[in-house]
Amino acid sequence: MEINGDDCIIQDASLPNATFDGESSVLRSSLFLDHVGEVSMVLNSDGLSWKLIESSDNDGSACLGIKLLSKVTTEIKFSDVYAVELTNYGLIHKPNLQNAGKRCLGLDSHDFEMYRFTVHGVQRAKTQPSLWVLAVYTFGHKDLQTCRIWLNRVNASLKMEVGRPKNLLVLVHPMSGKENGCRTWETVAPIFLRAKVKSKVIVTQRAGHAFDMLKSMTNKELNAYDGVVAVGGDGFFNEILNGFLSSRHKSPLPPAPSDFLHSVGNNDNPNVTVADTGQKENHPLLPSPTHTVSEFSNFTTYRDKDEDPDCFIPNEEFRFGIIPAGSTDAIALSTTGVRDPITSALHIVLGKRVCLDIAQIVRWRMTSTSKVEPCVRYAASFTGYGFYGDVITESEKYRWMGPKRYDYAGTKVFLKHRSYEAEIAYLEVGPVEKNPTPDRGRQVGGVRALWGKNKSERVICRVNCNVCNTKSVNESMGFPRATPYSRPKETRWRRSRGHFLSVGAAIMSNRNERAPDGLVADAHLSDGFLHLILIKDCPRAMYLWHLTQLAKKGGNPLNFEFVEYHKTPAFTFTSFGNESVWNLDGELFQAHQLSAQVFRGLVCLFASGPEV
Ligand SMILES: Nc1ncnc2c1ncn2[C@@H]1O[C@H](COP(=O)(O)OP(=O)(O)OP(=O)(O)O)[C@@H](O)[C@H]1O
Image (cartoon, rainbow, N blue to C red; front, side):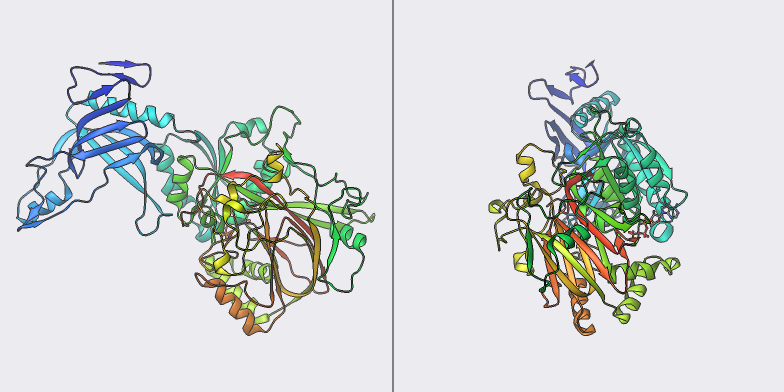
C-alpha cells in the first residue's frame, strides 16, 4: 500500500475491496454500514454514495410474511460533510429492520466487530428544511488499512471545500436568555471539535466586555481568526458588531435632521416631497460646517485602525457567527430559518456565507459650546422608537422573568397606548415598480425597488436570494459592496410629521416566535434598504388588530390606513414633546434627534439564509 503525500491513494492489490481509479478519482469498496448492512460504497468528486449489496443475509427484513422496507439514505455530498474520523475497533450493527424482523421472530441479532470510520454530516429535517440535524454514518471493514484509505480520501475532499473556518474566536454570554449561554456552547462544542475548528472561547464577565475586546483588538490579532462567533442573543451580537465597527468603519455620516430641516424650511403640508438631491452642487443635505463629516456619497471601506493601507478588515474569509441562546434570537432566525444552536453551528463549520445590511444610527446632540456632536451606533436587525423602545425599557425591570418578560412588558405598554410627536424625513427611491419579477427589477438607489404591503406582492428572502445577489449601482461601478446608498437622480426626501405609536426600521425580516413572518416579511438580508414602518396614532382596537396580524403566519400587518411603509436607504428623526427611547437590536439608545443610513452587505455571517 502506498500513500502519496497526504491524501492520494494508489490502488493496492492486497486490498481487494478498495479500488482506486486514478483518472476519475473514484474509490470503491465493500463496507458495512452500521444498522444498514453490507454496502458497495463509492467516493467520487462531489460525495459518497452507497448501495445495499443484495445477499440472503441482507434480505432478512420480513416478519410474518410482511416485508419490512428500509428507506435509508444512500448518499451524502461533501458540501454536507463536516468531519470524518477513525472510530475504535467495535460493533457494526445489523440492519435495524432486519433486527426488528428477528426480534419479531424471537431471534437474537448478530452484530459484527470490525474496524470503523465515521462520517459526520448534515441532514435537512423532513418537516422543516431549515432545521439541520446531525447525520452520522459509521462504516466498518475487517481491515484497518481500508478504513484508513477511506478516511484519507474523505479528508482530502473536505480540504477542497472552500470557505470553511479553521480558527474562531467564540464569545459566550453566560446570562443570555434563560442564563444558558454556557450550556448552549457545551452542546455545540463537539461539532467544532470534530470539524477540527480551533476555538478560542471567552465567557464574558459583564455587559460591554465583548465590545471592549473587539474594539481594542488590533487587526493583526483579529486576522488570526476566520471569524467571531457570538453565543447569545441579538443584544449580545449587537455589542460585538459595535465593538468591531466602532474603530474600523470609516464612513461619511448621514445628514443630521437639523441640516435637513434648515435647508428645506418648514412646509405646510408635512407629507409633501421637499427636495431633490440629484445634484451635488445644490445638495440641500450637505453637512453643516459644525459636523466633522465628509461628503456623504463617498464610498466606504474597512480601513485598518493603524491606517495600514494594505490591511483591510475583514479579510475575504472573515465572518461573524451567531449560536442562538438569547430571548428572541431574531437574527439567527432570519438568517438560518430556525432558532436552533445545532443548525447554526453546522452553518458555521460548513463555512456558509451570507452578507448582511447594517444600519448606521447617529444620535445628534448639541454640546455646551453649541456644536452638534454625533454619537454613532450600528444595528443588524431592527431599530425602533415608541412602542418598541417602551417595551424594552419596561422589560428590563423584569429580566428575572427570562424571555416571558417581553410578553408581560408588551401587554403593559400596549395598555398605556402612548403616542409620540415626531418628524421623520426619509429618502425616497423610485419610481416604485409594483409586482416586478426578481430578474427585471429596476436598480434604484443602489438596489431594486421591490416591495409590497400585500402578501401577493412579497418577495421573500431565502437561500441564494435573487434580490440580495443583485449588484448595486455602486458595485457595477467597481466600488466595494459595503457602500452607503448611491444617489441616482430620482431620489428625493419626503417627510412625515405627526403622532406615532411607533417608528420602526427593519434591516432584515426579524422573524421571531411572536412574529413568525417577521416585522417586515419581505425585508431582505442584503437589499440595501431600511424598511421604515410608521404607525400613526389610532384607536387601541385598531392597533391590536395590527399586532395580531403581526403575530399571525401569513398576516397582513402593513395593510392599514394608519401604517406607513417605506423602503428607504436613509431617514432622519426628530421628536417633540414627550420622548420615548430607541431600541437598537434590543438595546436601549436615547435619542431626540437621530439619523440612519444603511450599508449594503457591510458584514458577512456564517449562514446561508432561510430554506423557506
Ligand atoms: N456577562 C454578562 N453579564 C451581563 N450582561 C452581559 C454579559 N455579557 C453580555 N451582556 C449584555 O447582556 C445584554 C443582553 O444579552 P443577549 O442579547 O444575549 O440576551 P437577551 O436579551 O436575553 O436576548 P435577545 O437579545 O435575543 O432578546 C447585552 O446587552 C449584552 O451586552
